[in-house]
Length: 465
Ligand SMILES: *Cc1c(COP(=O)(O)O)cnc(C)c1O
Image (cartoon, rainbow, N blue to C red; front, side, top):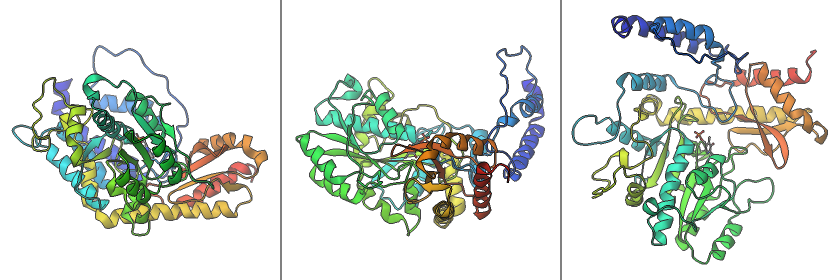
């Protein structure tokens, strides 16, 4: 079968190409929720069927599970789409099947593409080259990677090498509204998901850190080094910690400053919203997702860590028992710089998309998403049936059914809305109230899509109309 497939490689790729074109051309009409489930097979046949036969089986059995998650009305979870250039890069990454690690010597040097892509991203976000980074599968892994280096730093401050000796206890972590994935990272890192010290958020419907409370909590640590996880865009209400104020604290206190800017970092692409990130260049590490607002296919995110911490980073991720470290930046390999050893050429979709659309293209994507959020926001503000749970600060609209008496209907409203398959949103709880979140990050979303969504919302409430 393999030899048959090799002989019909052209036909296979042509058919897959056509299927891809058909899918992308009709993505607007594809449902955003799978209409039904399928039964799964446990036994692998002895004889293979060859790719084209398998493609037919796939289309028959699994095609109904494939939803328009990269279409214009998939607004749950901050779900990004995929630009044409990013799909080109993604396909080629599979075709080329490189394993980017080293940037010098012999063999595969595709890691140079990753290094260049990180430089282009620094340029897109107007961040200094005192930072360097690499690609991982998502913001969760980016938080994990950077917090692992932060943990190594905290150990170093106490005269310990945690990578070698194990975690022990006594690494202090502070945060106000950490993303669930940062908390998950604390658990994966052995720091303990319950062990972070909760700093108050600002009062008045805010998720951003209360800097006065932060400073009091810092002082009560009596100069003990700690890790601060700050938010560059929370998922519910896209609130930003006052990064400028934190950058001033950094001059007076000894801490590792991490910013989770998974999607909020893209505010830097627009002169209208860039101020939200003022001061972020002073962070020790930053997390940014590419499969959200950069609109490249899953799995794509990157981390940034200050170059001055590269020794700590290599101590954390070195893939050798008795390494000669040398200068980790001169003798650079991603193998010693991040969790995975073998990886796909994950930077390529981002590289294609960055080059294809440039700073202007990304500014337009970001500003368009925010405009679409504002359209939904305006509808909700005027509606008798819905109300905002928080002001729409950027690209997420966090709302609920109006009236305390309708709180127990929020769940079934959302189930019905999603089931109709025209638009997809996700549930949330905010300030103790059940709510719904619509996140706008997809480059395809236009005014018509917001109109469709509003019509759907109204229909669910008035099924007979
Ligand atoms: C989405 C998100 C994450 C997790 O990202 P994944 O790519 O799903 O791993 C982390 N932090 C923030 C703020 C996010 O929005």
